[in-house]
Length: 93
View: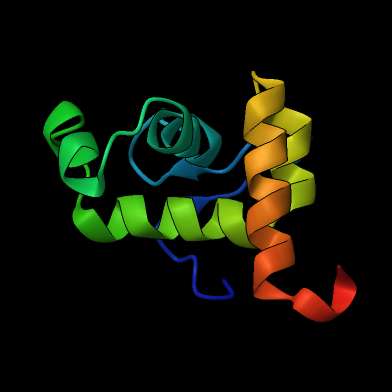
């Protein structure tokens, strides 16, 4: 599914989750951007996840700022993902 085969998508406003877990993409993204946890840190914290699981979740959030905005628990998360999406597409800034 658009390069996100490690994620499980459901109907509604819920963030996609890593297949086989209850961990959402936005949850991992917020730990990464707000707490500064690296992929290695996240891998140690969630030992059932692979590095690819985590990378796909983070990439999904970076490429879907509107979805992150709906699920974010902090306004700072929304600000960060907006800046990242603008920097990837400078013509829209």
